[in-house]
Structure formats: C-alpha cells, structure tokens
Image 1 (cartoon, helix red, strand yellow):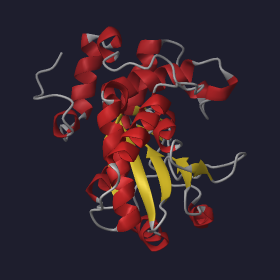
Image 2 (cartoon, rainbow, N blue to C red):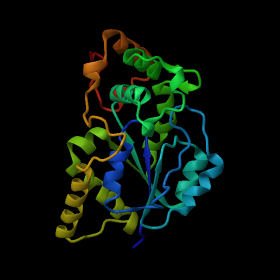
Image 3 (cartoon, rainbow, N blue to C red):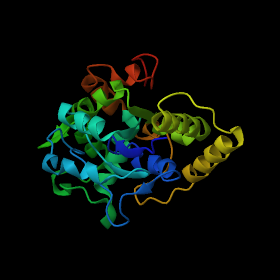
Length: 254
C-alpha cells in the first residue's frame, strides 16, 4: 500500500477550508504553523514558482493547501512527487458575492491585498470582481488558469455545492479516490470500516470553524445580483462556463 500525499487546491472563495475539513479527517497538515503554498489567487500572474519545491516537504499522510493555477511544470512536479490533488470550485455567481464580501470585510484575517483599489459599495465591488481592476483579473480570466486541472487524471474535483448539500457522496468519492492512490487498483476494504471513515468525514464537514466561512450557503447570488450585474456576468462568461460546469442548464437564467 502506498500512503497518499495530498494538496488541496481551491479556486479562490470556492470553499477551500470546507474541503480541508474533509481532508483533515484522513490527513495531517505538513506543519501546524504553516501548510500553505500557492501560485495565484486574485490574478493570472504567477508567484512563488521558485518555492514550488515546498511541495516536496509533503510526507505520506500529510497535506498542503493553497490556490494554484495549472502550469505544465507544476503538473509535472505533482506527478513526479506522486501528490494527489483535491480541486474545489463553486458556482461563479456565488464566488462573485463571496469575494466581494471578502474585499469589504473589516476582519484582520480577511485582508485583501489591495482593498484601497475597490469601491465601498457591494454592488460596485461585485462588478469589479467580474471585470477585474488594475492587476487583479476578472473571475473568468482567473478561472482559465485553474480549469485545466479538471482534465488531469490524478485530480479529485469537487464542488462546494456537493460538499455542502451531499457530504455523504463527497466523502464516499474521496475515500475511493484515496484508496485508488494507495493501492493503484480496486481493492476490497471492510464495509464497516469504509462506512466509519465516511461518517467521520461527513462529521468533519459539518464542523465549520474557518474565519472565511461566512454563510455556508449556495445560491446567495440570487439575493445580490441585479439585472445589470446579471447582464455583466453573462457578457464576461464568453465560454459559457456556468452551463459547461453544470451550474445551469442553459444561458437563460436570471
């Protein structure tokens, strides 16, 4: 059996810390004081590439987390070090709302790196999240750096919606994913043990203690989007990502 190593990768404001609740039920952080590495959160510009070797500190049974868009060199490093990846993403309309609240937050733990660039009105901030401002790219430009991970066979994709609404299914899928890494093939595991591990993960998912966990809901965009923001969002969703990822059946949503 090969004990997995894990990296939790979150498209910003998609529920990284919620996904971590599931992973931490089976893995330990690399260090209690620091278990973060990433390349890009609020822009398409990559940072910390010279620190990518940080990934090598992940030992079997440990995890690291962060925000990392796809690059061929990074993918090769993950494959070479045999590190699995959880990729958590979310309905981008909810991401717009969540990121806007994050930008406007007074919490010391939620500081955006350039708060001074943004207006003070929630609706105005939501527009800048969609379109981008200064060196901070719009939401769809940033997603394009993460989207290629969905096509990689070593990546475990999961949505915020599934973690929140169907934790049992998410936990079962993640357990099977980890077993696949550990054994490299289908393996028979005691049913009671699998059920216990799954229930433990579900229990962890229901514990929400992160400073960034605001409401813990999906579909909140319906309360915040105005017709103007809806049209702006659709205009920038040039590749119809909302439909392509299954968040809508067609582009007639309002």
